Length: 548
Image: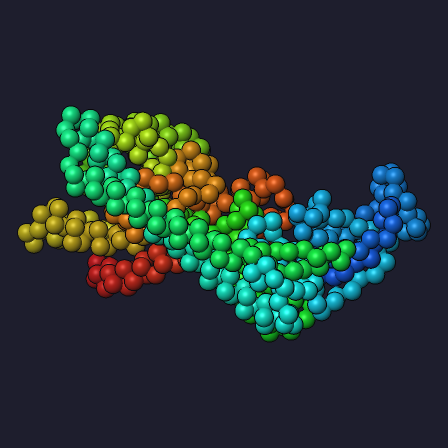
């Protein structure tokens, strides 16, 4: 037996088995997250239920969100009368009834024994709204300009009205975020210039005053246009009957989409599923992040990782080059290497506290005092932002890049360096033209590991820049276009916020899975891009390595 263990083949098979087990576990987790998250966008059937309640038989319209088996003993101990107490378990349904403004709760729990009937009526519609979530009901009419439209309400007519409302909202959003935002930005810059002149004891030029007056006039005109657009369709409403048969008027400007899940074929459901996944990726969040999309979080995550990569790569490579190529092999450099390795084990929240104290308050505060004193006491860089978040994560991932780069440098034979210098090249030329290109795959490996860790970090970002909802993206059309002082949204923090801070946990739970799956997808995409570059570099310098 011991002779067999001394052979390499059992250990090879054991290692291969463990790697396979790890891959299966990771794939299983990914499939679970993907299934739970992407199934949220599939149009599930909506039923009309007849339920026996303590107050009598009631009608509900809702979607079955989940089922579970509950023991009869547990139900009896809770004081619930069972129609068949001999059964060991009873099925309990969790039904989403939505209609938040008319119902006490979004969800109700119903024992299957109290369910009298369940019908999937084809005319039941799901009305997705800007506020208050979805509305379940039966569309029965349309109000245009405060008057009831005589023509028959068909799905095509509803789709036409919803499309007009969507275009109307887009026009309002363009004025709010683009035109008014640009005017406000220019007006704020002129006011800062005005305060600076007055602070210096100088008079404000007439050109500045005239420009301020012109911008104020422009702002007032845009506000008037905005008010006119908001009242243009304010009297148009979709009439929907709720579970009690009462007509509810839903403003058409508040309607995002309407669909009939019980009348849809599989191809229609597939198209609906793809459209809503696209909206989830491209739209802004709503309802305290429990509805809508996550585009600002995707944008913030990718931009932060790219900025972190630009910062950590040169810093880590230069540090590794100094330690391996220039520093003497003594106790001091050994201590530095030990310190670098130990930095990788420091809890990430400690880096967040360091970033808040050093980058935000010290560096940012001094930048404000030197260059933005006219804006004080309102801070510009002396407050958490995407720049300080990227720098904090760069410091956090720096040990990974240093260790990986130094290992790559150590694999290059000394004969390469000696041969280059023997041909007349200096040490710096040898380093720049031969050593670093040959070590570039190892550098990219360190960057890949840094991206994988930084993209999923949340704790330090909560202190140095990430927010629940950012008023604007760090990138816009106003000079200097990239605003590193702004706060941003992050997919990891979005998962935390929706999962633990949402007022409606049951409704927001699928979004946790969807955002988690999206976060993993973003990390994998960034890593694949880095791996592609690494493989290209490896193939490029493979001939040189073979010659060595």
